[in-house]
Length: 111
Length: 114
Image (cartoon, rainbow over all chains, first blue to last red; front, side, top):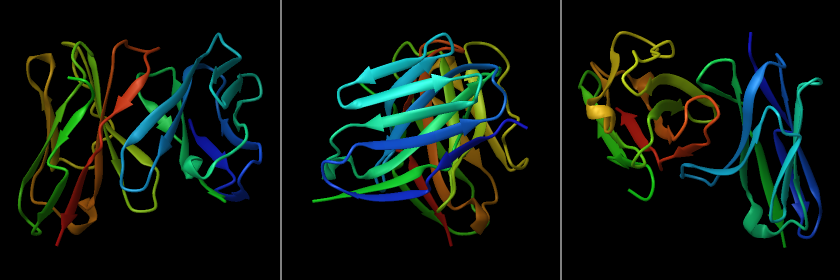
């Protein structure tokens, strides 16, 4: 069964820390992996998309890596800020057209 | 449009009533997805449309759920004879490319069944 798992489920850190959020998936045959952010009561905002041929993508303070052989992706957030507080979702497109989502990591960054 | 637009943003209905949720994807996007997010749960795939191909309905939870996409653009998700367990946020997403495309989501339609 194709599954996506995210750990930790929740994380609370002081402002300024560098963070690593983890995503693991079964089945290394993937098209791509996408990281999203979801604020309470809102839709999902796309952060980074990594194609299966890529190893990492960067946008500002965010860096996402992909290791297909081990079935893992990490989202690195540098110099965290209170505005980064949200739920971060990892979604994997296996060899189908639909994305399978993890259950997310709820991040709180306090001043 | 500039982004994926969904309506209504909130819908409260009585058990047994039918509801329709609308999604207007980003202009030019050929792929359209519906997902459901129940309180405290992850996103559950419901249905996927790609161009003129037959939709992938494998995620629809029961025959009370149906969706259509007219003219390859706007989509409507219909839930008949709503039940309390249908209460959730229904999210729509669109993508420019099949397979490798980035998904963009709307703000969702929050459905509450009393």
